[in-house]
Structures are given as C-alpha cells and as structure tokens.
Image 1 (cartoon, rainbow, N blue to C red):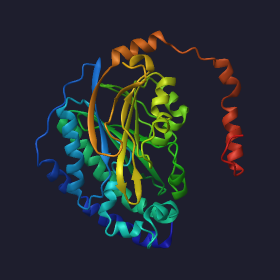
Image 2 (tube, rainbow, N blue to C red):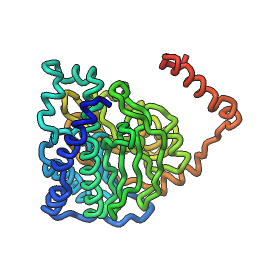
Image 3 (cartoon, one colour):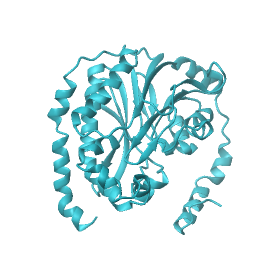
Length: 362
C-alpha cells in the first residue's frame, strides 16, 4: 500500500461512505410499494433472472431504484428467488467517485486499453470503493429481500479484509433480510489477477426454503472442481453470477455452468451483466439450465434471455422434486480408488510448477 493511499485513502473512503448514506438508501426504498413473493412449498421454486445493464450511478438513490425496479418486476411475475449478476455492487457504484470516467481513461488512452494495463490504480479504486459499495449493496438487497419476502442472490460486490486485500463476494439474502451466504470468487479472470485482486478459498452451500443453493462466481464455473464440491455438498441450484467481457458466443458460454450441471446434475443459472461501463463491454445471454434429460428439447436449456446485450428480466419455474428423483435414479459411480491415487498429488505438482513461474500444467 502506497504512502498516498495510507494518508488519503481513509478520507476518500469516508467521503464515499457519506455519498452512500444509509438514510438515503432507506428513503429511496420507501418511495414505492413492493409485491410479495409467494411462500415456497419446498417442491418447486420460481426464479427471476436479472440480466443487468451496467450503468454508472452518480447518486445512490438512482442505484437503489434501478435494482429495486428490477426486483419488483421479477417478484410481480411470481419470483421467489431473484438472481443478479457479478459486479452488481461494484462497477455501477463506482459512479459515486467524482471524475471516475477521466480516472479510468488512463489520461487519453482508450479506456479498455488503460484498464487492462492499469494494475495499481484499479486495485486502489477498488480499495477506496469497497467499504461504501459493500455497505450500500448489503443494505439495499437485505431490505429488498425483506420488503418482497423473496430470496435474493444479489450478485457480487467488492470487499476488503483486515489486510486490505480485495475480493469479489456474492451474497444471498433471505426473506427476513438475513445474509445467508457470502461466496468469494475462487478463480480470477486474468485481468483481475493482474490488478491484484485476491482469491477466495471456500465453497459455500446454503440450505433454504427454495432449495439448496451455491453461487460460485463467473470464472469459477470454467473449472469443474468448485461446482463438483458444491454439488457433493447437496447443491440443487447452482448459480453463476457473471460479467463476461465479450459478446455472446454460444459455444464459449456453454463451457461454464451449462457444462457443469451436465457433470454434476443440478439446475444451473447464468445471470449476466450487459452493456458498456468504464471501458468494458459486457455481454452474454443469461439462461437457466438443467441436465439434458430434464429439458424439453434435450439441449440442457430451460429458459434464456431474448438478447445478449440488453437489460431483461425473465422467470422460470424449477421442479425440485423432479431433480431429486433424477439424482436418485442416476447416482454417480465414482472410482474413488482412482481418485485417491492421484488427488491431491497432481494438484501439488501443478502448484509446484506454478511456483516456479509456469502457469500451465504440462
């Protein structure tokens, strides 16, 4: 941490905390009435998937109303579990930082080029933003869950630990507003690692009245291990809150949660951010997936957004009893002796190669 950050960082953090004052959040939330989600019956659950357009919000009230309006739309359509994408509580709230567009432009460079190579300032901005963003995100979605009697997977925000390390953290709130799960991202996108973000090291599973839920974040779904760990611990709904910096591409998107729920039978949800924000172009087509045999067309798809670049909210009902019966009938035949022979030794070898400067497993 630089001397500048040690001296001025606390002042900047306090300034941003004042801009995201709890009173302003409560006033905005009280401005309109809210529908109530139907009570869950434990057999089926109706999802509301939010494909969020990333926007810089310069006033906290604008941010609160944006996510509140999307929550209302989902619950009005019967959603009992509302799902937002990665970075719902980070990039949009960066608008609270005065002059953020100029800072992110890298003094005349194209924003995307500046951000890609802008290691220290990106980490610094996340450190400055994290206390205010984390609090505003938490207060907003905790209240929305309570006001709508819904469960809400509130996407992710940025958080700091006591050592000033920055993590991305996805949060699940229950109908009473309680925080049920806080999942930190365990596999970083290359740019995030370059900027200096830190890796989480725990896979959480939350048992709720709308099913057993896990929510590894974005890049976590590129690897089977986090999802298999969640599935082995009982996850029935595996959520992928994501912000993919690319346009929608069918096969590239299938490498994530769609593929994971074929390996580890569960319902999968891909909630994506779209649009242009701070030099990044986000895109993708949000979807709800299942094992091939549980989908009408045999393609693993239950529902998808109509577009890959526009804000949408869509709802779908999942039959948990059908999934549970399928899992009983198709119990995996694990070759545990084989796995004991190689695990964790092969991972130890990979770690050794990485520690010597090689990132690829030969």
